[in-house]
Picture 1 (tube, rainbow over the protein chains, first blue to last red):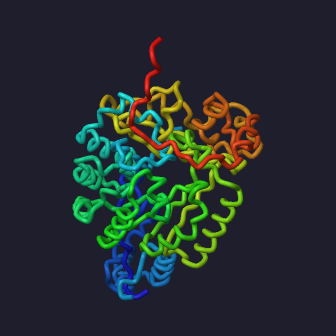
Picture 2 (picture 1 turned 60 degrees about the vertical axis):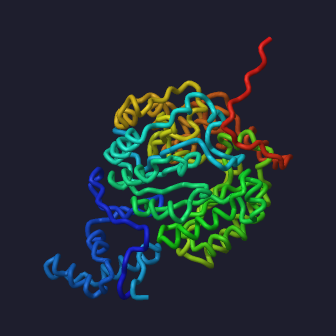
Amino acid sequence: MMCPRLVDGVRLQYDDVRGEHVLLIPEGAVRLNETAAHVLELCDGRSVDEITAALSERYQGTNVTDDVRELLDAMGQRGLVIDAAA
Amino acid sequence: MPPPKPYTLVAELSYRCPLRCPYCSNPVDIGADRYRTELEGEHWMRVFHEARALGVLQLALTGGEPMLRPDLDELVGAGRDAGLYSTLVTGATLFTRERAERLKEAGLDHVQVSIQSPDPAENDRIAGNRSFEKKIEAARAARELGFPLTINCVLHRQNLDRIEEILRLTEELDAQRLELANTQYYGWAVVNQQALSPTREQLERGEEAVKRFRERVGPRITVLWVLPDYHEDLPKPCMGGWARTTVVIAPNGDALPCQAATTIPELEFPNVRDRPLDWIWHEADAFTRFRGTDWMQEPCRSCPLGRQEEDWGGCRCQALRLTGDARATDPVCRFSPHHDVVVSAREPGKTDEFVYRTLRRPRRPARV
């Protein structure tokens, strides 16, 4: 996946009642941990490298490459994220 | 223990509908006086915000036909303002390109279009209305505007053999989801059970076709296949448990824990005109009565499978209808002393003739 983005009709939102990030999808919700929410926030058409760099900066230089790949693969397999470059 | 927070608000905006589907899950007395006055827009909008504050994330705008509400655009906008993800559940005969554009602009998230059959003539016969072409146009318009699309087809003896065609049509329409809901016997489906009840072989072939389709298509299209619970021997967790996940608001503002709850005569339903949703969810007797497990009788109380918090005793409406007691174990369960009622109801129906859904008031018996 080069430039991941959320598929049409999927919405990232903070659920202030439960205090957690969720991905709202047709007739459902996927609960997200904070890191996953931060990754998905950045899925706006920029490249995976740019996402990784931005996140790494946010987490004081931690290498997040594998975590980002893993999350995006899982989201891709569930049909929630697609490649904007494809 | 505090009650769980609900996820879904089912807003039945109107019981009016151009379609006359004989399996409609609306109550059979939709023509009754108490449904004449539809809830005012301002109350709906307040309820959407109250629902979000309770934890609701999903808003289903349904009916009847929700597109008959003249203020639908405003209601959609209010749902978005409240932070809800909205689905329009429509028969799609009124879903023109122009109205779809306005709904998109107002913030509608997702469109669910019903079809009654993938065969035009059969669709129109089951719906009791010439509607197939409009539905197809509506589905295409929805995709062109970038809405995620769900196709919904209620299955029964008279359309189950077309399941391959339904799957093909879903793919051709570029839908993301397909809901294949085998008829459950609530509302009008009870009246039409003889015309709807499928054979075991039909269900098995249907299930096989869905399996092959899933293997071929993968996550691109999600297919939901709901087996009719008469063919199960453990009950479904109806509504995810009584008053645990969902609030239903009827067109007149009555708040219900499920769409069929009005069939339980011992319950009195609070109206959102009179009470805030928070009170309704936490305090109203109709919501607390069968919540959790304290109300359970045997065999649920000492369930040998320990499923009390898995199936929550099954369906209260079905328990009442088939055993005469809303507190009884759902007779779908093989441990229910009334399970034979469900087993004998598995016989396929014996007529093809439908009693169509209507808003006409039941005729009064002549005075003597």
